[in-house]
Image (cartoon, rainbow, N blue to C red; front, side, top):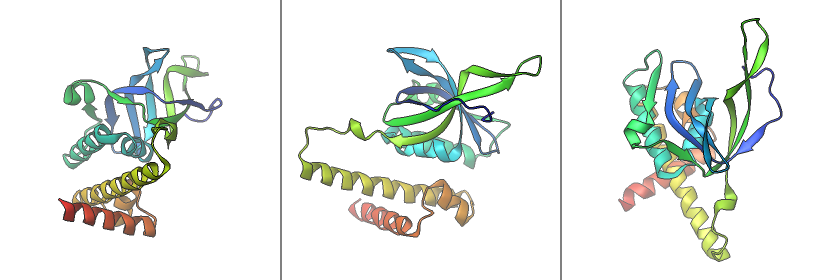
Length: 200
């Protein structure tokens, strides 16, 4: 479905009602985009790596959704499995802390011609939305805040890695899913996690 992409677009505010997945690497997100302050129905296709990055960059709600997915995986995926965020959270999940790169998806019509799907986008990349940081903070405070945020993200990544290992995932897959394949990043995540546990 990604063969005939148009130029990538960017957006920074989407909502998701349900996350649909099976044993493949692909995930479907049923939701909407926010356009001129209004909700417009839009679904998204992505893979687990990009979904994990989106959730990691989306604060406490993203962490909660990540844990819901881990629990669903632990119970065994169906054909397919679904996490209904409206039901679990009481509302759709809003993602407005990231810059999302999206492109068109394509499907065949009755004649066998490829046509653009106007109700589904491919979610291709996720980036931190750095400009959302408060510009009024002093430079020293911003540096300290950034350091604390990095430590927190690293600790959560290590905790996620441990969670995947408890699901009997092999080492390589657990490291990839937690985005800790880099040796230095893994060590930093371990120490951040250890410090958090000592503080607790």
